[in-house]
Image 1: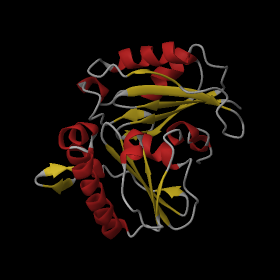
Image 2: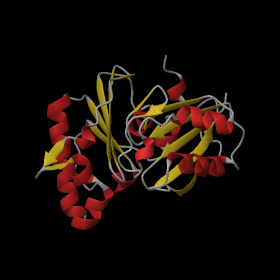
Image 3: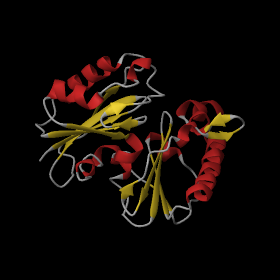
Image 4: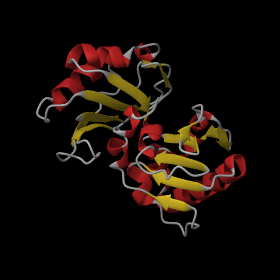
Length: 230
């Protein structure tokens, strides 16, 4: 079984095809996300993006928001109200002719890196701030911690997203990341924290042994594990 894995971000759409072992068969392809456009425009952009890729049997999608049963509940960084209630899995199946599973993007990334022991947490630093929480290798209920108050009346998303990093500079942004890690440690008492996303490479902190920076390709590589879940 070959798996088309798609990572929908607030900046880029990325995709590749995974083989039966979960390895990328080809390098990721990418295109700018049409932020502000209706969901149908994003689906069309994905269809064009994956056209040159190898054949596949099923589809996994990491989406930057809350998703349930293949439908989108929130899409805070995609800039269009039409996402609320949009049946993304059905839309991709209709266009590409293969079954699709949709996960939160941090959760899909987590599936490529977690070890399956204890409480494991993944945060993604990119256009916004994403989180995923796992217990003994199984997904917990998705919590939109990104939109929870963080500091000075702003949310994690507002304080740690890419716009904030560009505005305040790397040094101050890293101090905020350190504070966020401290908060999440107290909140979840995680056994291990993984930091991913495009801005993970901007983290310049002396991290504890239970905190690891992971490759941004995990957002694609988790696509195989998405089909292992019951």
